[in-house]
Image (cartoon, rainbow, N blue to C red):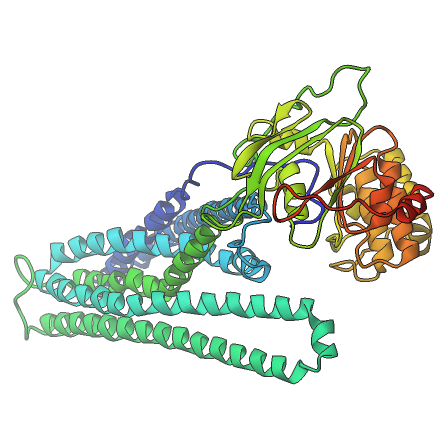
Length: 583
C-alpha cells in the first residue's frame, strides 16, 4: 500500500498526444534544395572562366553564391530549432502522461511496473524519442523530396546520368530496410536490458543492509556482473548493425557517384557522345551534373546516419506506452479539478467525516479470492475507531478502500454523506491525512517533506513541526536536505515527520493510520499514540489499523476484521484498556 499520498491530485491527461508537426522538417528540406542554385552558380562560373569571361562577372556570381549560402544556413538553423522544439515538447508530453498514469495506478495493483523499470523508461529511454522526431523524420522528408528534384534537374541535361542515379538509388533503401528490421529488434532488446539493470540495481540498493547482513554480497556482485555483461553484448550488437547500415549506404552511393563521373568525363572527351539532349554537354552543364550527383545521395546518407534513432525512438515510445497500459486505478482517476463537496455542513455536527461501508468486498486480481468480503461499518463523525485483526485479515485493504486508493469489487462506500466514486474521490481525499507505518521520505528539505509541494502558510508549518516535536531536529539540522528514503533521520524522527505532514494538512477531517506503532520501541510508540490523538483532538475522525492493544484502547471502539466474515475477535483485556487510557 502506498505511503503518504498527496493531499491534492491532478488527473492524467485524456486523449492521445498529438505528434509534433513537420514544419521544421520542411524548412530543412527547403534549405537542402537551395544547393541547386548554388551548384548552378558554381557551374556557370567555371564555364564562364573557360570561355574567357571577365573576372568581375565571376565575382558577382560568387557574391550570389554567398548570399544563397547565408539564406540556406538561416533557413536550416530555423528548421532545426523548430524540429527539436516540437520533438522535445512531444517527448515531455508523453513522459508527463506516463508519469500521471503511474501516479494514478492503484497501490494494490500487483501488475504495476517496478520503480527501477519506470525510472529507466521515464529518465533515460524517453530521451531517445526526441532525436527520432527531430532528426529521423527530417531526414525522411528530405529523402522523399530532394532526390526527386535533383533527378529531374539531372535528367534535363543528361538522361544517362539520371538513369545511373535512378538505378543506384533503390538499392540503398532496400538493403537499409533489411538491416533496419534487425536494428529495431536489437534496440528493443537493448532498452529492455537497460531497464532490467536499473531495476536490479534499485532493488539491491534498497536491500543493501540485508544483503550485507546475510553475507550475500558476492552472489549479488556476480549477478550484477552477468547482467552488465548482457547489456554490453546487446550494446555491441546494436553498434555492429549501425556500422553495417552505414557501410551499405557508402558502398552504393560511392558507386553511383563514380559511374556518373566516369560517364561525364568520357562524354566531354567525345568517347561517349550519347546521353544528352541535342548534342554534347558544355563544361558548365557537365559540372552542374557532377555537383548534383553527390547531393542526390546526401539525404540517403543522412537517413542512414539517423536510422538508429528510429529504432531507439520507436522502442522508447513503445516502452512509454507500456507504462500506460490499463490496470486498476485510484478512485477518481478520470476526474480532475473537482470542486470540494459539501460535507457535514451542519455546524452542530463534529468536524470529522462520517464513514459508511456497506457490503464491501475486494480482490487483488480479477477472479481471485476475496481479501475483504461483505464488510460493513458505520463510523460517526469525530469518532476514533481501531480496525483490529490478525495479519492478512484485510485491515490495510480496508484502509486503502476508505482512502479511495482502490475500488471495491462489491458494495459501496460513503464518506461525509457522499459516495466515494470518481466524481467525489479527489475532493474527498483532499480532506484526509495519511499516517503510514513506513513513510516515504523524499530527497528534499525537512520542511519540503512536510509540505509535499503544498503552498502552506509558515505559521501552519511551524505548528505542525511543534506538534510533532520536530523542533529540536530542525534546530540541529536546519532545513538541510534529507537523503532519499530518510537517510540521516532515525526511525522515530521519520514517523514524527509523518505526523507533521498530517498536522500540516489544512481542513483535515479524516485521519487514516496504517499500523503506525508497529516495530517501534515503547517510548516512540507512546509518542505516536499521543500524536494521533492530538490530530483527532479538533474533531477529525480517526481510523487506525493496528495490532497494538494500547493504541486500540485509546480508541472509542474497535471494529474486528477476520478472514472468515461474521466472527469477531476480543478487544483486549482490562489491563491493556486501563494502560491505554492513561496515554
